[in-house]
Image (cartoon, rainbow, N blue to C red; front, top):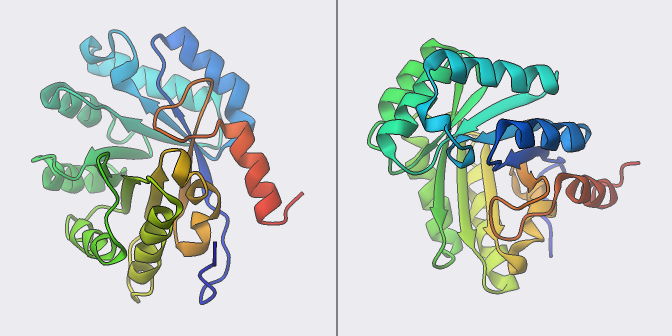
Length: 237
């Protein structure tokens, strides 16, 4: 795949995305893979009972995650029931470094305002599991996501073929040519899009998501594999 030659190559940070049924499993996965990442994402909806946790319990869980992996940025996400997700994300404002809010969430603007007051960043995410947008649609979608005021803009679309991967990366590169663009994440999901998880930094993407022992999205490498591939691709030892 050709690279975005107009920009300096920059290795993306690895986010260890964990979809664990229990807190014990979450602890084990962090211990196993924490040396292979710079961020840890807790997919709280996958953890049994997380939606019923009190505010104190949610905050204590985030604190425990931070203690298990000092120096890493912590992302909290909750997919599914909107009301529960809103409660979980609101509780961790000021404790998590980043919360993930879906682009279609009606509370997105409110979260952006509240998170800014609590010094937590908002990552706004758009997922398309049915098809790949073309490069112009991708660039335009980043512009629309930017209007939300979120700190990081994420687009993930399913790739059916290698050309699909190039389309999302070319669209990402076009957006990042803008002088005042926001940090972005660009992912071509699925087996056909795995290249994007390695080389997307060349096109402006700042984070590449990896998993622990089980994927949280189609086409993910585990964090150890991804770190090794990035070492090779970016010429680091």
